[in-house]
View: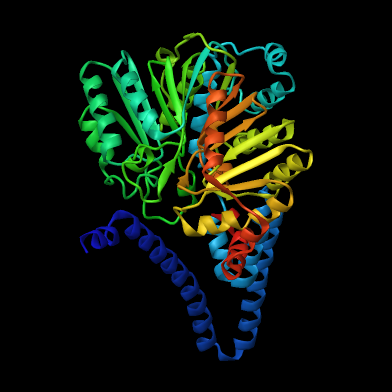
Length: 524
């Protein structure tokens, strides 16, 4: 009973209730004023009632036409236009109202201006990238994946002299990262979508506080909505009082706005500009299997030591300044450090357009699928994909590429799980092999192709990661970590169930409900 009341009166349900109340209130004021004006006119001038009705009807049609033209002419991802048109046509003025409130997922003008300013500073002090000819000699046609990414995002440069290490579970990551934190001498940067008080985060926090007392500069940033219900609303103030420079990214305020859609979904840890981590892991106990809400939690991370950390440092400082609302001198943190390591790495950050030129994360995945000759192995917690991604998967399979996707068997969100499964049939018929991880939940976001290229990061195969969130990842070319990633895939396939067309046909009613819901998936 105590847990029930704690959940009911926690911040998340109260926030959800606030949003619903505000929507109803705004709509009531809008429609109430509309009908009040009509009533007053008809009461004061009864003879004008037919004309008033005609004017109101005409105004209604004009508003709908303007809204429809606006949807058609806007530079939307194509899949988002049809659901918005349905919303407007079916719900009339209410649909227009919802469209006006929620159709934009663009960061604010202030955020865009600040990010351009920050990026310009970084470009003035860039570590020389690996020449494209050098990369091409090493990996052949795969060099085009790196070139396309670097052209779209100049800060996503290819780096050499970087040692890579792969962690197939949160527990192994936890064991390794504590030692690195203990050895920090100058600064530690921590950026995660979720932090939650418990064994994982509290152990790391103890080390951070100890290092701060020793004079190490420690900065922490977490996402407000991502950490909602995990820590209290004022948790960042507590960390500041303890001596940590802390930002709560995009704090939620009880106002109906689309700005809350742009979340910081990145997971970055940087130590002295020499060692860096990224991957799917958040700083909460289920990620290291101290708790088991959805069976065994399958996740991963990658450790970089050397030049590749330069990119991660830039990414963190960019988001930290965006959250703080002001630019700063970042020169002291841009460390040029080399380590012995095979191959090349390309850490990159992506986010919503127009802060970023393109939807970079989806570009990376599609380009890997298009360039593969032998196989592409994928893990993702959600498979809520657009037409472009679905076709890339199927076309790769039809070329004879062994395309395998591993998704969870035990879901964390039932609707997302239903939407994921609703994509199985088309993929299976197209030659893609779909597996479900039977021990529990897969949260890792990984691609591996032809023993040559792989990527580990924060990017799910869903609309939110592709369109709305700030994300990050690292593309690796012939690095040490790729062998361990392949071994992890092979072990994962052994405990995963290959899905058939018969499996995809099960639970017809729920499947069709999900097909309907899938129409509106791009909006949320």
